[in-house]
Image 1 (cartoon, rainbow over the protein chains, first blue to last red):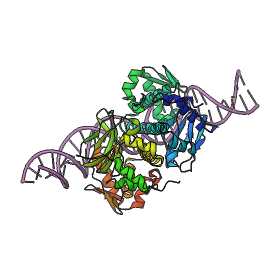
Image 2 (cartoon, chains in turn blue, purple, orange, red; image 1 turned 90 degrees about the horizontal axis):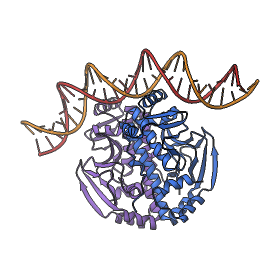
Image 3 (cartoon, each protein chain N blue to C red; image 1 turned 120 degrees about the vertical axis):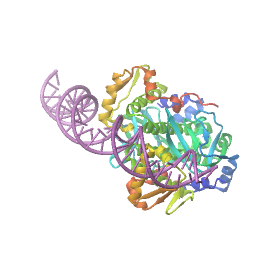
Image 4 (tube, chains in turn brown, cyan, yellow, green; image 1 turned 90 degrees about the vertical axis):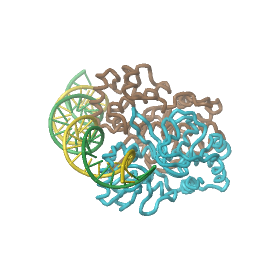
Length: 238
Length: 238
DNA sequence: CGCAATCTTGAATCATTTCAACATAAGTGG
DNA sequence: CCACTTATGTTGAAATGATTCAAGATTGCG
């Protein structure tokens, strides 16, 4: 059920059977959500965190009536592990596709912090990884051109889908509209359309019918100036 | 010595005398750094975290030879508490002014995680707060105009200096060049100059001789669409 | 005092954003 | 299965805003 989460963790550290068991049992409830449903509103008091089991979630902030997506979540991600220490969020969380989510009560996390220091460190790591992705997005918005940003996001998502086993060598399914991708990258849907056709013409990547097809991975990563170090995909030193 | 850090924590939660003592003793070494010195290089193996005791640090990433500052740190901030779980950073850390830094070995943090769950949660909170600021910067880059971004950053820093007791009602000292501020906001130094004079002409804020003077706080915050919720300045619910 | 860094201003260029109209695809009920 | 409706994607042209270049002014520092 939380297999994708476990894969994400196992790729970076050793998990004992006991620890895996604790994580599994920390998910007390599983719910479905329709596309377009707001999962969490900013400023609400929270007493549990949300693991995404299936689908795509967006965390976004509003300024006026425009939205900026600050993070995309795929299966195996905690969407708001940070709500454990923040208790309320500074952003909203939205289901971009139909989703299945698991709820982890903060009491369960509290217990992990008290009883399972190694597991607690791993959860802390997950929130720090989330922040590292934030930094790369800041950098993309600040320094990359619009087409580099699109290419970069496709590279990032490739690695993230890959580590949970949801990508194949040619690409991955990404059930999002061009406009939604644009909301992550400060790009109008009109831009998105133009940029996608130039990336296609260059033979780098294709995003059609909700699927990302990587045509030339090396060239795409070079074009995007993509360096996966910020995803901390390798095993953590002991 | 770490008084500014303690003030930042006390504003959000209760610290026992014992916990304060542990934090104080976790700083094993204090060092000075000149302006322009790189404190930490991306990808280096790290075995301690850095508290800033005095001065201003910038965390930045490079794409090609341009830099994007992803976070500014002031006295009382941990610059790389996240290095405890990440072990190497995805960004560089630079002293923008002469600085004093305190080093906290990861072993000391390890011990806190093992022995002091409440303190560990507070440290986790600090990294989550850091990420919340990242999100607001993403949002600024994505949705705010250039002059709103400048105004917003001045609002943010005001609150952050205020909570550690380094601001007065009229403003605060900010020992940075216009170009450095621009590197946080995707703004050329030429833009910065123009934007600062329009903000001055509007009677909102003045940045002269390394000091930010707030002329009309309400109007400035309204102009910047600033909502301090993301700084989690109030006490955490128990 | 003089040098170097920083800031200011104007003008030209370049990229992005917006507007508007149309095309295509997906989903629904007859 | 088709016609209808809505959502999504594409294209051209105009407007806006950011970036760059260049030159001069000011400030800070030795």
